[in-house]
Structures are given as C-alpha cells and as structure tokens.
Image 1 (cartoon, rainbow, N blue to C red):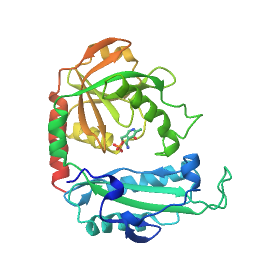
Image 2: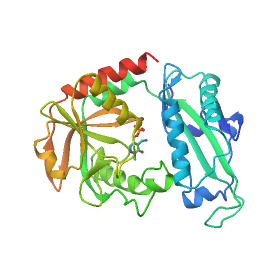
Image 3: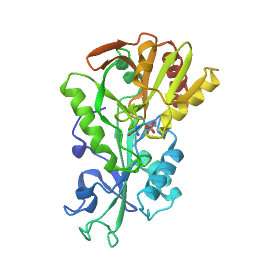
Image 4: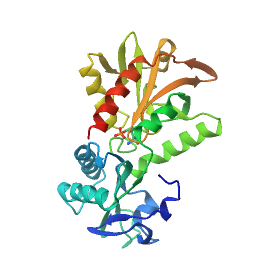
Length: 296
Ligand code: PMP
C-alpha cells in the first residue's frame, strides 16, 4: 500500500463508459458541479477483491440521483459491472471505491437543463480492515459540534449529495482545530443525529441505541451492524436521543464505510468530558463484521 497523492496513482478510472488511465483523467474547469456542488457520490470498500454491499451502494446512488433530479445515463447493472471490472483492472485486494455523478460544463446556469450528466468510478488501495482496527483500539475523542445537521427543508438530507458536505467539512475541521478526532452533531430539534460522516451507536445495559435516520444518512454499515446485532440477539432501539442520553451511556461507536466500526473513548460536551469504557458489544460486532468481509 502506498501513501502517494491520489492524482499520482497508477491505474484506471471508468469515465462515461470508457476505462482511462487515472493520471490522464480530466474534467473541464467550467464543470457545473465544481461550481455549485451539484454532484452525488458513493463510497464503497473493497475487501478481498470484492466490493462490499455493491448493490446497496449503487441503489443509494440512484436514490441520491432521484432526490437531486439527476438522470444517470447508465443503468444500475452497467455501473455495477464497471465497478467490478475496475477492481479487476486495478488488481486491488483491499481498497476504497468512489462512484461520482455530476453535471458537465455546457452551461453555468443554476438549473443545469442543458448540461451533460457525467459518471465515473475510481478506486485505490487502502489499509485493510484489520490494520485499521488496531489503530482504532485507542478510541476516538469527539466534541459536540456547534454545527447541526441540516433540516430536510434546506437540503436533501437522505441523498449522498456533495451539497450536504459543506457543514460536515466545517464541523470536522473545527474539531481538528480543537484537538479532537471528530464531532457528534445534533439535528434541528436538539436530538443526536450522527457524526460528521458516520452513524452512531450507544451501549447501555447490553442494549444498542441508535438515532433514527430522519436527519442522518441511511448508512450501509449501520444496516450491517443492526443485522449483526440481531444475529447476536443484542436488542437494538432506534429513537430520538437528547445529548443528556450520553451521561450514563457505557459504550459508544461510529460506523461508516471508511471508518468501519470505530469505538469512541470520550466526548466533550460544552467543556465537560464524558468517557465511555465499555467496548464489549462493539468488539463482538466488529469481530462478526470482519468475519463477514473477510469471507467475501
Ligand atoms: N453519514 C454520512 C453523512 C456519511 O457521509 C456516511 C458515509 N457514507 C455515513 C453516515 C455512513 O454511511 P455508510 O455506512 O453507508 O458508509
């Protein structure tokens, strides 16, 4: 695995139906989506040369497209085939995959009626789940963000749309400036929504609690974790939880494609540090999760 800049990586990208060299891939400087964040995307993980939950990711890509009124000029199956072929072409065993759909450069009008819809899939090598799991053992230190998740009347909150990410970028950048690893964000009603780019789970008395997805992305890892918890007979309660819920929470972890399952060690809420020491359920679920992805 190499840490070289993404734009220097060798390999191929699928762009509008063609496989081109990643280093040679190009978009025009007047691309609509570069100016107005009018793109949608996915983030998938490759384990043992297979894309984990690829169908679900492509389904969510099409749902995001509908929510953003984008007509993808390829079928679900064509994109799935491209993703699978790209992993083979790039000879990847463990990696990250990024499908992206955006409006081209034909017009700068805000409603892109004459802009071509472009589509690409790229992928590159990343650390394996196992090695990232070792790093995560230390536990993340979060801070409660002053930013909140947008209202459904402001943004298409269930789309994995670039326009939603401005708030998350600022929230996480604030956390870094204060020396934390990430944030917890509330919704407009003051209930816990999710982290910057990950869903959240809490453990209390051998039960898992997770916020509803009213103001959070419907995470594919979240869904896998709930199904693993069901298979281990761990009760899961979805609901609206105020921040005070954390005062007697024993365990806390994040879930997401990039972060996988990551225990949280503490959260700073208005200067008060709340600690989480129970990782038993997180460990049991993580073990099952890696069993599943390693058997792909
Ligand atoms: N919430 C947000 C805002 C995200 O960007 C992500 C990452 N896709 C998640 C949650 C976790 O979703 P998933 O498990 O599908 O990666």
